Length: 277
Image (tube, rainbow, N blue to C red; front, side):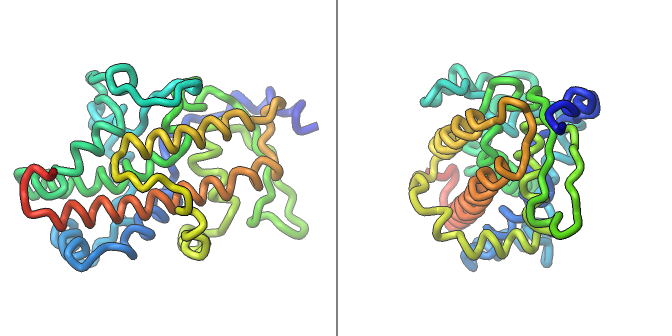
């Protein structure tokens, strides 16, 4: 059985860090389509004409190894049982940074108030990535390194394995399932995912917190994380039943991240004072 095969392939499981390229690209494209003319002009000036948000959406991961002070800025470690955010407990400054909530609060000003062109460019790249990260449910969970230490096997057909295709058991971890596996099984490329999210975006943002504060986004995401963590199969096999439960949630989080990223950029580039208030 698949369940019996899980221990044998666990040793192959790797580690994951964030939404994969598909998720980050979709968030960035959803945001790009909603930029105001002023924000669009600012993005073009900062990144260079013709450079899309999607094309820089993975930069923060690309430089993570060489910039260890940014390591903790991709997530916030809130215990599963907690329903409040206490910066003194969950966002403590370290040599690896503090947390994604505090960084987004800083970036809101740095987007247009950073003192150099290079600093503004980096602020934009970080913002595009970290808003997406904050909406990946397991980026708000302390336990088991956000699910990186929860070893699972996937056995999912999804939308990309139909007809005579038979899914193959794959060793991974729960965090990686949410980073990449769910989205990769939903469509062949990230452009198709964009259209899926766009089609259902009104549904995805319905009921979302109207707050523009990253700490409120974190708490909303954490509530999602509590439910998906509880739904982890006891046999540690992630199958199509789990996939059907998880996909709408993942797409919802992607959609909300895109809309909020656009709002954050529109507000920042519409401001006339520094620091922003």
